Length: 391
Image 1 (cartoon, rainbow, N blue to C red):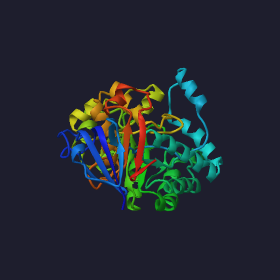
Image 2 (image 1 turned 180 degrees about the horizontal axis):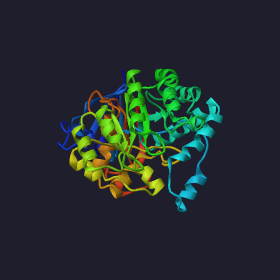
Image 3 (image 1 turned 135 degrees about the vertical axis):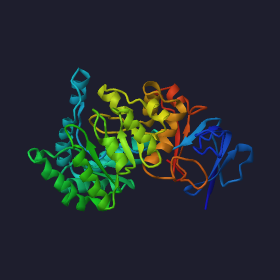
Image 4 (image 1 turned 90 degrees about the vertical axis):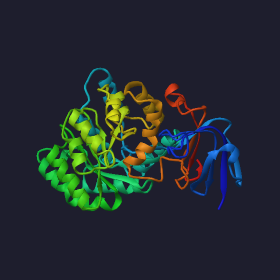
């Protein structure tokens, strides 16, 4: 076994209050981290760091856990620049644009889909993302959904079956028949590649009854529910997420007091995942993160990287948006983009730099994590370790 010590860290975020200053970030100033193979072996003050096989000098820069992007749509083909340009010229976003990507994805080869996925993963990794979830949802046939998940599963363990993204164009006149397909033959073909099941519960996509049937069938097949909830308008998605103990209700933009209260009461089971890239790209109403946090909900931040409504792979950008436009503090936004994402994936081995955790960490070219919001758009990530290796 080989060990590496990263020392002379100006500010270390552990996300473990017991290790640092008692805050949720568990900050340690003038710190060091020891990595042994793929795991964190020790954290603490630099002057107490044990010897290691290799030394890395952080030169007073900050170290944070790797970002956990718990919501993305990266298996796709095609481009929707024209749609974005039209939307920025005044046309409102609707779920129908997904059909454009469905056509391009169906026409693409496996090799093209995988190459596009790898390009986005590399882009995200260079910006500090060390764990990502990604979904199907741009095939909407049994074969195309299964191949999307097979491609994704070769590159991440956090794979989500989203056959219920929209009603397939092939079933435009028979939505009930499509729900039967999603909960039947398609689920059987897709479940072996996935950990999660998801549904877009929204006007123009799937209503509450349809969403319940899809998530219940997925759970019966061994998949854990998560849900696109209350993005474009108010609907039953959040309440359904809490009822079914879904790991995450994603978007959570249009909420009533009852929805916020339900998320707060379910804070240990259902995370409210906010996706500010979508609001930025669609000029939509920002979710009020402050309201959700003050009520006691557990909040995650994610990119929602997809070609239509949020074409960004940058977690630092989403942190800056959350602080600027959603009422979060820099500390809250960083926690939500790391530990919060881990909670949304029901993981305890990532999103933290406590001993025993996976050694996924990011060195910032800044003395503090606050610079992620303080200096938006600046490429502050200077080094990334994933599973204990510099990448």
